Image (cartoon, rainbow, N blue to C red; front, side):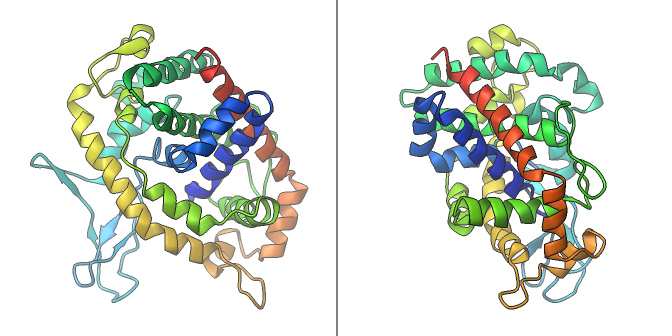
Length: 325
């Protein structure tokens, strides 16, 4: 299943929500759409890494350290993936522990760093400082600002859909956000919202965001540089510049591996052209529901209204973070 579909959906809806109130923000996003959408995924999900690698065919599989026991191609056991930097090898789980809280702000911090976790009420100041610093640090900041805006959409969308921040009135299958209902959310977002409502070319969109450059501003908003700018003035604690170069390597790996994942995800989300049935594994995860049952369930749960609420929430934060520029 793919967190990427949900986060791109939230970002697109956030851009729609801010269009009428602040068309200049929507214009900036449109001019740098690939970077905006890259920020909406890579800006936070630094665990977009393989789980394992086949030593025979060279294929990489899994996500964030999790992987099937055997290679789908030649059925031999997979070797765990490691990233080596500066003579040190890192498993994806270690990278997750080091960086996840820093990109998600509200949750995901390990125990020794939990004191740096932000409250929802602190987000406007944090986002505003990051956007202001991005304008101040770069001679041509617009692409980086779009990337930051995408990252903001991820932080807000994740906090709401995972009930870190109250606000959603959603009960779909067995909860708001569960492993069993994620296929329903993905399939609805991919087909009904993406293709039917917005005519999104998912393959083109997902390929283009992997071609975007690694953005140094991400190290700043994750507090992995020397403390500087308005962000350091407002949030002086928690800076770890010694991990900046490792983050850059991780971000490069995120983009490289997503290029491998994208065709697999697109194939899994497609419907059979004749029967209009969905992938059998997605059906199994939901307890055996077929595609039409999933869509009826999403409609009954008012999932589209949930997406609207998330998009409007994202739009409010995009506006407030940019309004003083």
